[in-house]
Length: 236
Length: 115
Image 1 (tube, chains in turn brown, blue):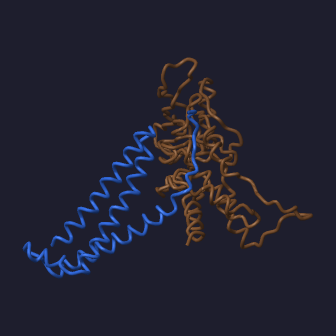
Image 2 (tube, chains in turn yellow, green; image 1 turned 90 degrees about the horizontal axis):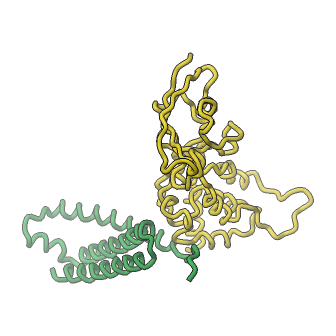
Image 3 (cartoon, chains in turn purple, green; image 1 turned 120 degrees about the vertical axis):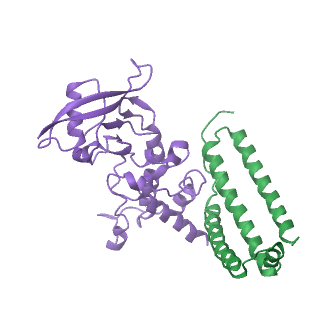
């Protein structure tokens, strides 16, 4: 069924605009073909080709099209248009500098991600085939390795808004626990030492915005809780 | 001095544990206080003073105040760390908070052992 959808989209082109503004725009959609918000964005882009946003895989794997949709962070490609209240308000991810329209500068986000050393640290020479884990040990990594670094969680976290340069943020901390929990990793103590910090870890006050928005259904608050639990176990 | 972002003070776990431990003490004391007041039903100054006359009640109430002020210290310091951006201002606010809470502790001792 064809119908018209109303949109309010955050627009800002620093080369042309003095200040950001909200653009009212409508588009004809066909519910039989247009299923996800990204489908409609493609139509909007055809209508007004100055509209800028990131996209790539269009199936919730690359994490490029993260944006603030009706006040809640999410991926355009995973958001059902049927469930959206109109006018659909689209804004860039909150808390990060805007490059243009819905595109934000993710430098600070990735700086925090890299700060947790997101790779296996093991100085022993690797065996011929691979470093093995028991199925139980591998189980612990479920719900951690699936993070696609879309930044929906970190940019919905007030602690990350206030201290993006010092607080690792939910995405970074979830990934930190992914390596702390990995039995093949040998830098557990150093990783815990690095995170035992009033800013890097303890800015998290468990308000769980991150859990609420994660498009992959992951639970950074639980991962952060497990990091704290390991620190307590180590200290007492 | 160059203005570089520095993190790595390596504390926070103790505060995090204390915040939780003091919260439990505050909750337990609240139950105790309501139970005692409910049982005694004080209707005069003398009756209120009677509640706090015993050594146990003095001890429990003092523990409550210490927990309250320690809990407050961690929480308020967190607020300054989040919102007070200039380092000098933050240090000033942290010192002022600590001073006020130490003062409150002395004051609560004076009040408790006066009755």
